[in-house]
Length: 92
Image (cartoon, rainbow, N blue to C red; front, top):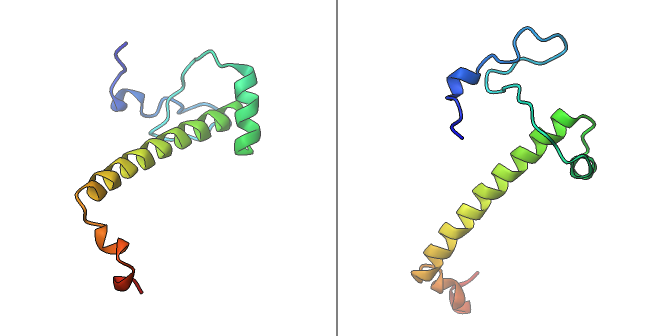
């Protein structure tokens, strides 16, 4: 499935009463597992489906960024650049 460009999504919530307009948000119709949604809502402390889904998406993106950063750190460690830390005489 090909997604539309971000530009096509901008302003999608404009004109909806009670909805905060955010140029990076789009209205999407999705089927959601209600049990998983309720569990996620408890975990994130959210009270609406929209807030829960957005919190879960942000958390998934953050976890992905952290995993990439850890992978990069492991690559640096494999080059031996942290070996000086193994010598207790050189540590404060």
